[in-house]
Length: 175
Image 1 (cartoon, rainbow, N blue to C red):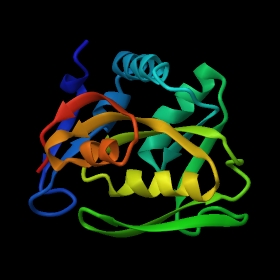
Image 2: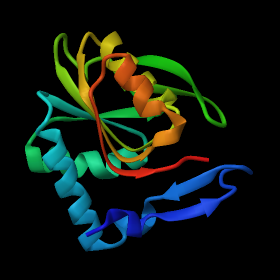
Image 3: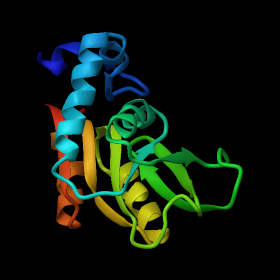
Image 4: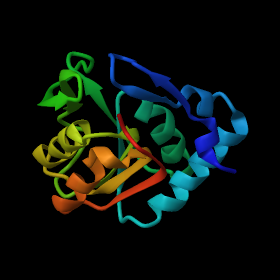
């Protein structure tokens, strides 16, 4: 099954000049979604990890299923002011704005090995912020698995240059 066939491309969303890669068409097809989860599970075996973290919100869709299958704790990396207890926060730049993500201070313990899963990597700002959250929490980033890598935006390359291991299922050019 070619998972690329299940990704819808939407021009000029969320702003002019961006070609948005929409995963809703992939997750609404039960066979494509199951294949995606199976491929992430397979790729995750290339990492040594204790916990799975995912970036709000689309990363949750994939990571929660993988967490269930692998019987690993699931950590939510959320947008600012969405978590009720004490948090660590990281501010970062997006391709089209600024944002903050947070994690509960008690979610990641010292030396926990954390695999980070998300739907897509573009320039890598969100992924780098997620790694910083793990590290601020005194955990170790085992690596990243992305459903989609927008390879010419170099986010994946930047993570590798910083010493992180990165896997992805699908490659597209970015705009």
